[in-house]
Structure formats: C-alpha cells, structure tokens
Amino acid sequence: MNYDVVIGIEIHCELKTKTKMFSGAPTSFGQSANSCTNEIDLGHPGTLPCVNKAAVRSAIMACTALNLTIDPVVKFDRKNYYYTDLPKGFQITQQFHPIGRDGWVEIETETGKKKIRINRLHMEEDTAKQFHLDDETLIDYNRAGTPLVEIVSEPDMTSGKEAAAYVAKLQEILFYLGVSDVKMEEGSMRCDVNISLKPAGSAVYGVKTEIKNLNSISNVQRAIDYEIERQSDLLDHNEAVVQETRRFDEATKTTISMRKKEGAVDYKYFPEPNIFPICLDAEWIQKIQQELPELPDQRRKRYREEYKLSDYDANVLVSNKALSEFYEKVMTSTKEAKMAANYCITDLQAILTKKNETIETTACRPEDVAQMINMIASGELSSKQAKEIFPEVAEGKNPKVLAEAKGMKQMSDSNALLALIEEVLNEQPQSIADFKNGKDRAVGFLVGQVMKKSKGQANPAMTNQLILEELKKR
Image 1 (cartoon, rainbow, N blue to C red):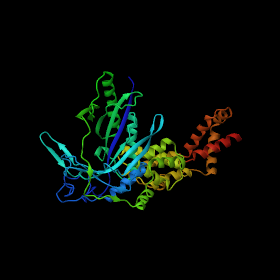
Image 2 (image 1 turned 120 degrees about the vertical axis):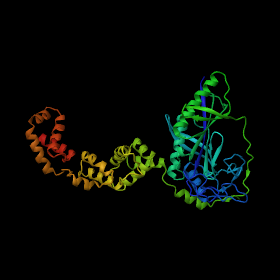
Image 3 (image 1 turned 90 degrees about the horizontal axis):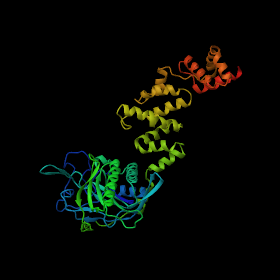
Image 4 (image 1 turned 90 degrees about the vertical axis):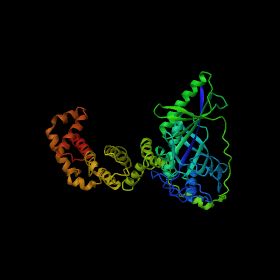
C-alpha cells in the first residue's frame, strides 16, 4: 500500500549568552561538573528568577529571521516536570504565550522550493545533564538554566530529505544570526522528530511516534528513513503502530523503543508567579530587527547578482560561514569575484585540509590572496606562477615579495614578446605550414615554445594573440 508521510520537528537550541536564562551564573561547555551554577539554578528556597535580556534579544532576532510574528508581551509559565535534571522540580517556559508565532522558512527539494511553516518559537531553560552508570546516576547542573529556544514546525515535511533540509536551514540561519553555535554534536542544538504514516490521500493522521534527541542532520534523515520503512512494514501486515518515544541507534541505524505514550502528559501548566509579564518596547524590537546581520539566502542572492557567481559557488561559500567571511574580506581588495571564489573554494580549502587547519586557524591573509589575484588580473603574474606560490601565500607570506624573490615577473612587454615569437617562428617552419593548412593546434604548440624560451614568464594570452597576428602576416 502507498502511504503519505507526515513529519513535524521540534528543535531545542541553546542561546549563546554569557549568563543563564534566569540567573547570573555563567553558561559553559566543557567546564568541570557543577562549576557553573548558583542558588537559582539549584532551586534553593527563597531564590527568585530574573529574565536574561540578552536571551530575549536573541529570541527576537530568531523570530524575525524565521518570519514569525512577535508577541510584545513576554509571559512565562511553570511546567511541573519533576525529574532529577530539574532541581526546582519544574521548568520555566512559555507554554501559553510564545514570543513568536506563525512563521516559515523555505527549503530546497528535488521538485523546487518548499515552504515549511513554523508554529511557534518560545523561550525556556535547559535541564541538567545526567550520566547513567551501572548502579548510580551522576548529575552535572552546569547546563541547568541555560537559555533555550524551542522551535516547533507544522507537520509539513514528507521525507527524511526534506526534514534534513529543514534542520540544516534552521541551523544555518541561527548560526549566521550569531544567537547560537548550533553544534549538534555538543548538544547545543537537539532535534525531536514526530512521524506518522496514513493511507495515501487520507485526511486522517496515523499514529505518530517520536524520535528523541537526534544529534546530527545525517541522523535526522537516517532515523526518519528507517522509521518510514518500519511503520510501512507494520501497516502492510495489518499490525498497529504504537504511540511511543524512540531513539536512534547509530550502530545499527535503527530506532529503538524507549517508552510508550498512552496519552498526553498533564504537566499542570500555570503562569509563573515569580516573573511578572514584561511589555517589550516597540522601538527596542525595531532596533534589533534593523540591526539583523545579512542572512544566508540574502548573501547567496547578493553573490549571484553582484558578483555573478554560479549557484554552486554561492552555495559552497555561504554554507561555510567562516569561508564566506574570508571571501568577503578578499573582495574588499579585488574586483575579480570569480577568481577569488575559485581560490577560496578550491585551492585554499585543499591546503587547509592537507594541513589539518581551518579558516579560523590559518595564517593565510585575505589581503594577500586579493593582491595575488590582482597580480594575475594585471598580467604581472601568470596563473601557473600563482599556483606555484599560493601554498606559501597560504602560510602568510606576501605574494609580491615571493614573486620577486623567485624571479616570477611575467613578461607582458609586446616588443620583448615579439622578439621571442620571431625566434620561435623562424625555428618552426612546419608549424607555420600546419597553421596555413587549418591546423589550429599549431598555435598552442608555438605558444608552448615561447613559454619555454621565456622560462614560463611570457604572458600566455598576449603571446597567443601576438602569434596569431604574426602567422597571418606570413
């Protein structure tokens, strides 16, 4: 039987703030266990929460970039969720009054662009981290209270590929905004996927399962693809799909049941009594929105329109923000956009990979890359010569100094080139005859001979043009 796949995704994303959502304790990753906590994080009696203004600002930025309508009145609710990873015995969240509603993003699919609706974005606090051993559980409260935004999509995705594209899109946008480092492998961005199958064309949704805490975009797709296959097989054999929470096992590439869900959990939400509603200043919201950095799709469009880059080049650059920022700096000192893109995407990346470096750690300077490109464009340096010195340019050395030290000044003087061309033509009468007989490859051979006589310093384009002119005279 054919089935329609229905997928919705909840993304929890830690905000990149200096302090926690409701306390002045520092946020951290990789610090000693329980070293970044205070009385509020640990739920000591008599302590009161205080809303982190920087977290609200980040949430407004995210809402704007994701086309959400912003609620100017910030209200928090108490979610009674008594587990050991919440020392207060409850979580402060925004169940009834999310800061953002009714947004969307566009993803690329095999059939073109597709709009994925976003139901809501709300702020809350993260929980502690638990380490389950054989006979005991250890708890690190460093993460407890870290600012989070939860982004809840509508069930608009229909395949693992679409879901992966959606997660990648949000990850890219949030990273460009600078509101989160979105490192899924470190847990600062986590995905829960809800998936169900129904007979093709049916208006009635099937029984959904939830796949918790997916920690990479590739695992999002793998988990969904497996779950589609698992649920299809059950339905094909007239077996029931059970409402449950599952996890993805990377070793077996399968999903495994964690717990059954017989119904909705009653968390007994009620307004958080220790945080009064906060009315956000309209001018403050507007200022935040006006100062939003350039978003990925805007940058792609600019690269295509202003720099005339191909879709491929624009996508490769923008998908790596550090590389894109490096390219931006190169372009402040050159007008050769395509050549600059080629060197950044291909040559520089190859060197970084070979040396196990990154854009952030390389000694290569954008201004040196731009200068080398300008030397090529002006004829001062040949492309072959540039390829030869670029590994040293990538080590932070100046291209002009390198070229002079290696005697690489390109010969672009027409009189000097004509003298060499005359010599070559006098030595190669057969090539002249071949050209007269329509064998165009003779020109390439003659260019090569001139390059050999000039020890690689002749300007190839100028040499080619002058040879053609001289051949026509003979």
